[in-house]
Amino acid sequence: MSADPGQPGAWHGVAAEQAEGIGAGLAALLRERSRRLLADLLGSHIRPVALTIALIVVESLAALAGPLLVGLAIDNGIPPLVRSADAAPLIVISMCYAIAVATQAVTTRMFVSLTGRVGQRIVLELRQRLFAHCLELDVAFHEDYTSGRIISRQTSDIEAISDLFEEGLDSLITAILTLLLVGTSMLLLSWRLGLLVLAGFIPLTLLTAWFRRTSARVYRRMREAIALVIVLFVETFGGIPAVQAFRRETRNAEIFSALGQDHAMAARQASRLNAVYGPSITLTGNVIMVVVLAYGGLLTIDHDIKVGVLATFLLYLRRFFDPLQDVSQFYNTFQAAASGLEKISGLLEQDPGVPAPAPSVTLSLPAAGAGRRVRFTSVRFGYRDSAVLPGLDLDIPAGQTVALVGETGAGKTTIARLLGRFYDPQAGRVTLDDVDLRRLPDEVLRSEVIVITQENYLFDGTVADNIRLGRPDASHGEVEAAARAIGAHGFVSALPSGYDTPVGKRGSRLSAGQRQLISFARVFLAAPSVLVLDEATSLLDMPSERLVQAGLRTVLSGRTAMIIAHRLSTVAVADRVLVLEHGRIVEDGPPGDLITGNGRYAALHSSWNSAL
Ligand SMILES: Nc1ncnc2c1ncn2[C@@H]1O[C@H](COP(=O)(O)OP(=O)(O)O)[C@@H](O)[C@H]1O
Ligand SMILES: [Mg+2]
Image (tube, rainbow, N blue to C red):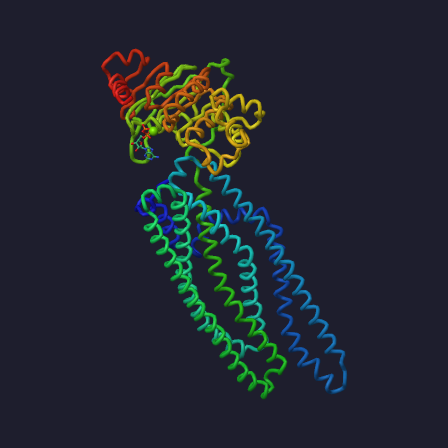
């Protein structure tokens, strides 16, 4: 992770994000993968979704009946009452009205709770799928795709999709149905008035098109600003020690406030747009209403239409314009959801760079306490553009401890990562007892090979919890025995609650050396057949290293080990030393032999000695 959000490189992911945002919107939903994901999500809830749509249709029909019944009451219910005190027709009409209203209330209640339930289930499913998928993606992927972006996927993007299910879909279906049904009814009631309304609809359509276009831009800017804010947040507070150490506070605060201003400006624009659009729709609607009232009034004089029909028409008219407001509101929800769906489906489509084996093989049980043979055969590997290992051949017999030394950047860590299968080689193979790592199931590989670096990660929990991570079913006695074996028991018992002392976030309550000892105890408990230590003891001071040294011998006995180190004392435990230069092994032999020569290791050795 780059700790410096001010550098152009750090914004690489963000630029990609913006590019993704451009051209989003309606078109985005048409993208194949978004559509597939949506169909997939809805597919398993097909019945409740169909039921919801049916309920909305019934609700819209019931709503449509209201004005019709009012018109009927005026034309056919009231006249008999006035003429001959016959209340029956009006009572019947009123009862129908009551039924329509009740139906509307019941169906609304049903579909609102149904969409809520289905929507939340789908969102939960998506959340879980996304989380599980991100866990499966390889280290190389996560180095590129910042945590800030993953957070955005899990929060704002999922929220947008949730909004779509919660409020968007039903208002869209209702709006479309209302426009169709009410429009048709109006034309049927009076084609002259209907055409008049349709003519008035033209400016409304233009206004809506303009609003949609402009607001799409504004809302996209708001979403982008928020995404950038999250990325900046994660980078700033994830790297807070570096931010403070290098006095980046002011700069980061400036970047933050610029992003905030960007968001505020877009939000202001959005509210200005809404302030123009909403009242304009209402005004146009009312003007049409006045025209219809005047023209309709004239038509009633000539007995072309009845008063009740005019009343029905006017009531429908009110209803006709409401959805337009909904649709534009919905359009933003829809856009946000479409772009969220597009990004999420993109992430879900990412294949892990280190795919699971098919078919997989398991290893035979190793000879007790012997470790496993590790072999690199013509391994070629590089990161994106740099070639790190041009073709590595290396054979480590079972049970051997090799020390890998070489200058910074020589490729030592890369070898460790290949052995732990955080990456796969581009050519050649890495094998464990002659089985390619790519053919081993994840659980087998993780229990056979353990890589320890200096950034050993402790989880929030107690000391015992963290040691037990090595073998979750270990008893307290076994946890303590592991700690004793590597020499950690002393400091652990001195902690306020011994093994039950919480280690704090990422082990912040312990020193680096103590954290390292705990990670050794963890490995001791896990008992892998191959152990890789990548500068694992380099954070320790001399006395603690001496302490660890003893523990290290215990951990190393009976397994194959690769120790990457730049300290003499660590290399001393090795049976064999490999000197790496630009990804090639340039010296290979027992430490005793190499020291006496005048090769690179001898030079390295004497420089270490003089440093002491
Ligand atoms: N994640 C990465 N992405 C791109 N290049 C990398 C990455 N990790 C290491 N490198 C490059 O690969 C080379 C070898 O790095 P590494 O194996 O870490 O060396 P060492 O551990 O010997 O110091 C270096 O030139 C380094 O810049
Ligand atoms: Mg390294």
